[in-house]
Image (cartoon, rainbow, N blue to C red; front, side):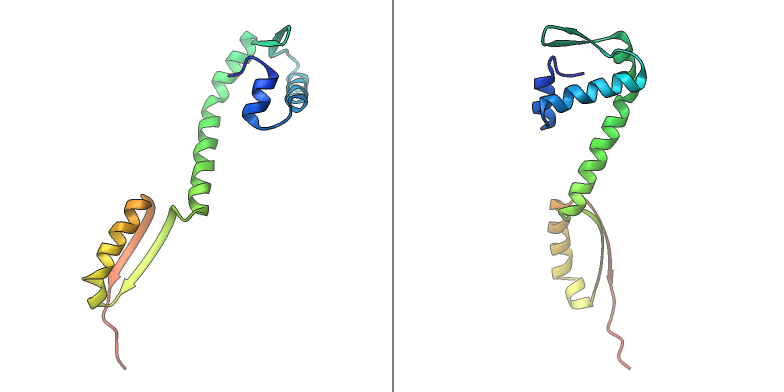
Length: 120
């Protein structure tokens, strides 16, 4: 929908131009209606294509957010961290280290607890 040609779409999607053309043909066949008017090498979306695109656009946004979240998790930029420290570390080094850690990773949630070592 954002590209004027299948070549441009293929470049953006990082797939071959024949794959884009085949995908469009398959989608049009499944839906039973033309989505684009072909004028030379250019594609013009039909009114039906524009309407369907408006319906599905929020799904693309959700998928981009999902993909970004998964990448962040893979890179250790998102998730949960539980830290338990003894009082000497918990009141000195740990807060500074955790603050620096969280500045670089705002999507990580941290549970931080300071506890004494119990001796039996």
